[in-house]
Length: 412
Image 1 (cartoon, rainbow, N blue to C red):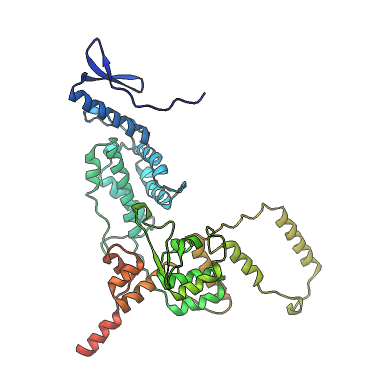
Image 2 (tube, rainbow, N blue to C red):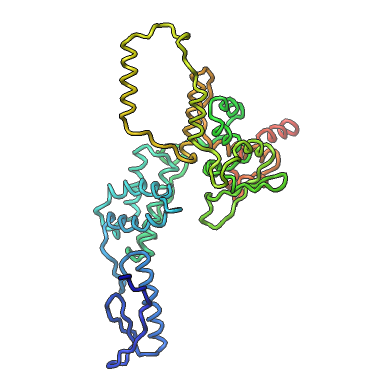
């Protein structure tokens, strides 16, 4: 038989006592004199608490300021049940869930058996020192400590620990530059255009197109890899690309990326496909590499092929056939496979005698921001990169030192 639909527990009269009551999870809760405003208020509050409890699958808040004696490991487990549903997009876990797991690992390792109520600032500093000793950079350590604080903040909201625990942890500030033993990382710099141009000959047309589009528009890697024909509005002389998923979608923000004539010329060879198909396919890139792979003919071989080598080739061929089938290529690149494709291109160039310094896709965004800032100003760079605040653009767009040098040359 189908289950009965869930219903809201009724506000009832207990005739012998004249009190109002409600039945929650099989228990009779008395609310006070039937019909009084106080009983109505208590009834509404109990319903709200019950709905919150069912949505979060947590125990009901305990009255009298008493909190469950959870250990840190138990607190992490409770938070993880929440995180698995919260850090999820389109039915798949986001990268934040993996980052949270990495942040909580040293916390559970060092203080798993400790009572969550006894975890204080010195304990958090000990966890932070452990991260530093593992060779993590200062920025990574600060981010992971922030995630640990977020767990305790959630626990306060669920009334699992006293508010004083999270308040005390807030006193632990982030590591400062030059005042810590934590490793420092080099800031992301723009990539030179000659390196970008040199790489195009050693990657597939799909990867080359993504590189050029990022350089021309300054869009993020996660936005260029998911381009589809249906997301590109081709009205007017300037097209616009609206990613169906982007970094700030969870904030309800809409993003439009202008595509000028140069970007349009790059896109045109990839637009003749199903509207919802991705433009840049790893499968198509692999087929291109196979087609353009150098052929080593017998005429170019200097030594004869001996029977032992033929037997070894036949044995390897049979082994490949019996092996598990190769994993099928995805229908589109992700940020990691896109970055690896660039690295493979740099290695191919090196084998061909062309030395290209290592660089990654995110540097293309910095290159575009720096270029726009030098030609049109910081506000134009902010609009192009899609930042809400100009101070964020400062990180991406290098200051125009040539202008400062010109001023010094003329007036200094």
